[in-house]
Image 1 (tube, rainbow, N blue to C red):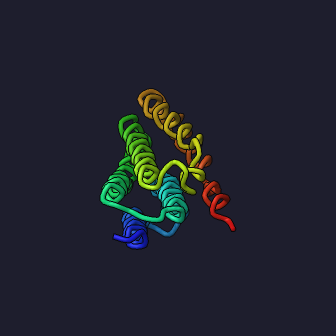
Image 2 (image 1 turned 60 degrees about the vertical axis):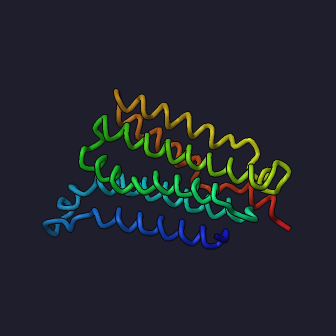
Image 3 (image 1 turned 30 degrees about the vertical axis):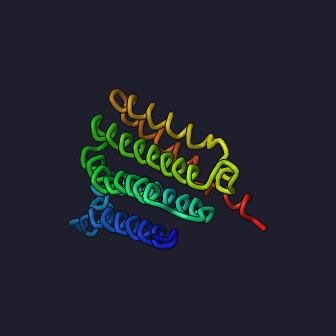
Length: 191
């Protein structure tokens, strides 16, 4: 399989996940602003999850710009990432329906923690394939943002069991950290 085919498949999966999430919205019963209020929890959880999926899509795209080849290990590592991302529509809906109850909010963090772990595994598999002296290795560096994100997700999961709103705030902080696309790869690959 070529790098381009893997990227196209991943792009398609993420696009489908975003579509599934938006299909969770119900048309309000009534024509007033108050009728929209019932959809606010779903909209807020959708917005955060949309941002997360956008971050994964953008960083996945940037990552694969530095990739020269893929093998079976890369395919499985990528599928592992897509598996965790495929749970986003479900957990987004559950968090919204429960209005940030403890268990759904903790599981939201678990899903994104495991997606982050899967992304880390994908980068390690790619580094093993391309070598420590490759442009990819130089671009990824020590991945401080990735390590901070893993710690914040883990903290959010634990905090969710006591204060789900604080946990949600931690998840928002992770999104803010990653909202600006990672420019390390662009800097290394620039002519």
